Amino acid sequence: PIMCAGITVYSPMKHWDLKKGQTLGVAGIGGLGHMAVKIGKALGAEVVAFTRSEDKRDQILEMGADKVVISTDDKEMEEAAQSLDMLINTIPVAHDIAPYIDLMKPNSNIVVVGNMISFPEFSPGPLVFNRITLAGSLIGGVKETQEVLDLCAEHDIRPTVKMIDIDEINDVFETLANGNDGDFRHVIDMESLNNHDAVTNDNAEEIDQPTRGEVVNRKS
Image (cartoon, rainbow, N blue to C red; front, side, top):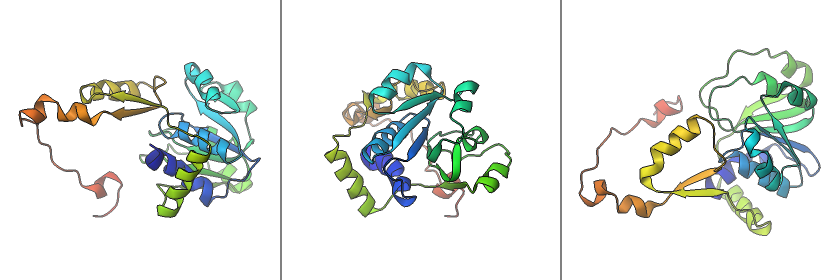
């Protein structure tokens, strides 16, 4: 997870120069978001986590967040207005970004690392008047990957994971579709795949390979 989720959230913090003492927001506290909380704290930022799940509040605070805001609570969101220097938006589905724009200070940065689908139409006025940058980021290179590994080693940062068998994967997809249950990163025990009936008896169903360009709206 550090070489996937970890580098994905570290790279924009490095690129947009997150400084010690600045306020970092993290929207969506799942596989990516929980690593952003831990890495942001290690870099010296004040970290505010935004989640729709009240049940996660104590867990998120325990992993180092200075504050947790329930994104579906209008009062809490209003109180957080214009408080962030940077927002790492890890939410992986289409969603309204306008409430998150309202959280940003002038000359701040919103970086999208999760949603590759769409945003509903929103007014660009707050972006223009406050010189807010709305950007995207995917992953980092070798140098930044080594940096985040060193940072995690120095600060004893470990991903919060739940090991699952391959047979549980459909249940996990359903759980994620309904909102993560507090298991911030699911990891498949590949030994359970090796021992699966479909592998041992060579009767696995074959599916067509996806075209990568279709997935990311990019030509092959």
